[in-house]
Length: 258
Image (cartoon, rainbow, N blue to C red; front, top):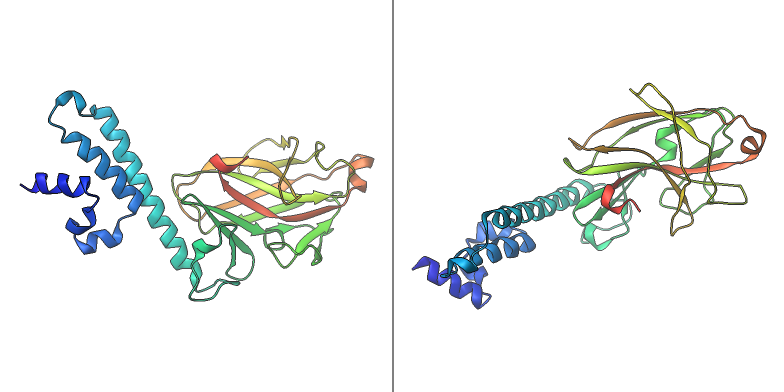
């Protein structure tokens, strides 16, 4: 009897009427639709119309991921609302798809389909004697840092909002005074804990005009990670004359890296 009632409500798009209110408030609508759709197919009278177990498992995994993404988005909303810099209490974090400035003004957050993109300001995580603050860029952060690369620099960055089990690229976001902004930049760097230095590749030119070079890729196992990166000085004459502006270090979900 319950099965027949459930099938009828599904056909009439009235499942909301038979779900406990406490459960309904916690469920993501996309997750509910995915779960209900595969459950409905499993109840077909003709066994040939029922899905195979491998498809059932796949759809249930998708439903679980949708639910987890929804809960993660809500977690971020709850965490940042009290420290948002540029939205009021009656506005939702998700109304700002390009992201918001949070905390002490040194972290920028955006949600990309349930996964967090976190950017840490260069003024907080990059240090070098030759760098100074610059407030003329009118960017996500009140200040960037600028200077030459003749002394190299060090990155020490701590994340707060990464999603566990998500893969992230670690990107350096910067500009330079060279004539060809898409040219190869001969950065040489080493991630803390690794033995050898790596060479950067040709940077990606972003829509906002800034450049982005991928430094590292990893799968997050928790929300907070501490990462150290050391950049060697640039010794050739051409590179030493170029001035750089650094906006920050970006942790971007890998499927949105390009």
